[in-house]
Image (cartoon, rainbow, N blue to C red; front, side, top):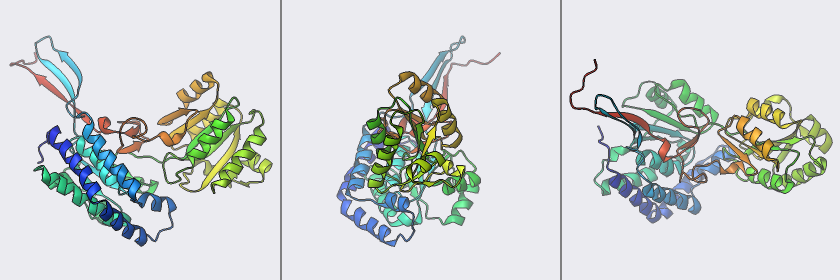
Length: 398
């Protein structure tokens, strides 16, 4: 059993990790290049997430330093109560225990997500994809060095080199205590984990995010938000669907401009029957396309009759991740934001901000589309459970 490390030790390990990442920067990038060169898949979003270049290493370092600077999320008092019999009752945050993170492609998860779980007082089990094995093993080596530097057991961060069959067996019958699983990846990975896990799973859900351009929209803001929404096609906060109010003034000119801007950045534009017919686009082949997360240079533009209809459509088809309304009308924005059933809702801003670092958490373990126990970006303060502390001097219940 690993006894909870003091907050001082946890912070020192994270700061040492930041230093080691900087010192070993060239080695990490070089090893990652081997993973990139060996990747023979045709998933462009997977390839994009696999990359650990100079900027990505900087992000890892920043994440480790930021985590070290944050307050301890463990032992925070949430509730207190003085019983009539004199007992003092407290409810405080507590670590889960052991957290398994199963992820595809992204070596930065080995620092950022593992760092959040570690700072929250948990033992970390990491199961990365075979495509990023070399990068992940190098980063775990640095974790072990950082832990040993501060007389902490290497067991706090463990890498599981399992194939699919071994992973399934571990999920169904863990060979060690397992309290929480966080899958980070595509729908197939998430479905696989949900099917076989025997402990709680935080679903890091799919995107398929919508932007609704209401009839009182600022058209420049609409263009900027939509284009920015496709600036990183591999991100789960990318925009895949655009709904345009049929009563938008100069609607056809706006759609023409939008299509032109999207094509400039190599985005394939599809339309519903109305938009495709009016603007010489390929029409979507079925309504099922509205449910798809593309993770590709592709977007669908459609027409809608009202804010209520936009809400209904988003709630029917979206992944429950992020949605945005572009409008100058505060009442319409409020109606949309209160009734759209997504983890993050935006008024006149890009869905690309659905990210723990961008929303003030300093980083994220995952972006949950579940409603329990946390929705949206899961940061340090969310990766805790709770525990009741009761202090007495011999009280018994009568």
